[in-house]
Image 1 (tube, rainbow, N blue to C red):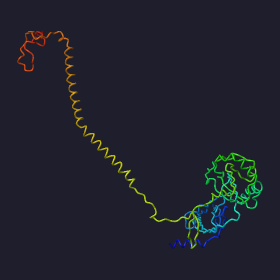
Image 2 (cartoon, one colour):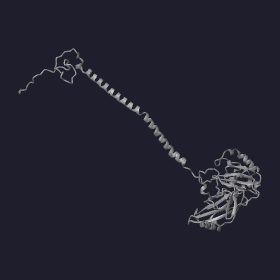
Image 3 (cartoon, rainbow, N blue to C red):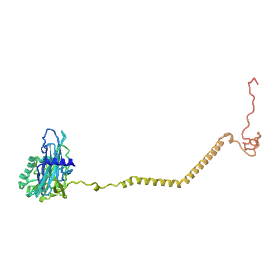
Image 4 (cartoon, rainbow, N blue to C red):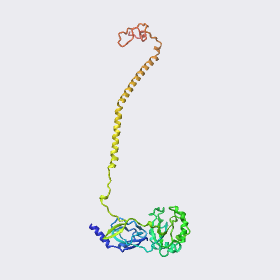
Amino acid sequence: MVNHRLVLFLGLLQLGLTENVLMTEVFEITVDPFMFNWTLEDVNNQYVYQPSLLNSPDLPSWVNYRYSERHQAGFLFGVPPNKHNAEILLQIIALNRKNYETRQSVLPIRITEKLNPARNEVQLKIDNLNVEDMFDTERMNRLKDVFRKKLWRESDEDLYVTFLASAIQMGARLPPNPKEGEGVVIRIGSIAPFSMELIELQAEVKPLEKVPLCPRDFKRTTVERYFREAGFALDWCTFRLFPDNSSSVLQSTTTVEKLSSNGREYNFEDHWESFSRGTIPRRSYSKEFAFSVLLPLFLLVLLGLLLSLVLCFHHEGIFKEMERKATDTETNKISNDHFALETAINDLPSLNGLNFSPNLSIKSRSITGSPTFPLSSDVHMRPSPPPYVRPKFKPGL
C-alpha cells in the first residue's frame, strides 16, 4: 500500500499541463521522450509507452493510441463524447529499453464544448496512408485545401476533422505489399451546406455504394486529379455525404459511470472497477462428472447384465447342440467304415467268382474249436495250400 501511494505521489509530481479537447473534433496528443525529460538518441524504438486511464488497465473507448516508428513517438487521438467540462486523468508509463529505466507521467484531459459544431460531414477513405500520416500538419492542410478551394468553398472558415480511424480497425484487410499504407477512414465537417460539386460527385459514385470494398484504382472520378496532385489515393466506394450531423452514431454514447480519484468526482464512461471473489460465478462439475464417469459405467454394467442373461438362457441349448453334433459325427464314421469294408470286399477278384452257399460241403480242418471264428466247420473260406515239394540240390538231406 505504501509503494502504491509512493508511485502515485511521484506520478503527480510529473503532472503535465491540462490538454483541452473539443467535442465532435478529433484531438491528437504526441507522446515523446521530452514528456518524460529524456533526450532522443539515435537508437530506433528505444522508448516504449503504455498509456491507460489512471488506476485502470486500459484507455477509454474513445481514446486510441498508435506508435509510429517513423516519428519515434506515440500518438493519442480520438473524438471526445458529449460531456461538457468533464476531466479525466491518463497515466502514461515509459520504458527505456537501453537501461530499463521506467518513468511515469499523468496527463489531465478536459473536455469542452465546441462552438458551432459541424452539421454536414464528408467521409473519405484514403488507401495510400496510415493514421499517423494524418497527424502531419502540412498533409492535413493539403487535404482541407482540396475542399476549401475546389469542392466545398463554403466551408473555408470552419472545416475540421470529425472522425479518424484506421481502415483495418473499420474492417478492411491489410495490403499485400507491406510498404503500402493500410488505409485511413476520415470525416471532415462544417456548418456550411453541401456545394453543388459535392452533390454531383455523390451522384457520380452512387452506383458504387453496392460494392462494400473496392480494389485500389477501381474507379476514378472527374475530381480525381485534385486528390492525386495533393498525394491522396481515394477509395470512391466509401465516399459518403452525411447531412444534418447524421453521423453522430460514431461517437461514444455508452452509459455514464461515476469516477472518484484524488477527491474529485467525474461522470464518465468505461471506467474499469475491480470485483470481489464472491461475485464471480463458480462452475459446477457435477454434470461433467456424470457424463464422463457415471454414464459410461452405467452402460458397461447394463451391457454385462444383458450378456449374462443371454448366456444363462441359452446354456442348455448349447450343450444339446454339442451332443447332437457328436452323435452325427460317430454315425457318419460308422457308415463310412461299413461302406469302405463293402467296397474292399467287392474289389477282391478272387472272391467275386466264389459262390458262397450254406449247403456247400467242403472238407477242411475243423475250426469249431476256434473261439474267434464264428463260421461253421463245413465252410472253408480260403483255398488249400500248395502241395509240399522236397527241396533240391541239398546234399546234406
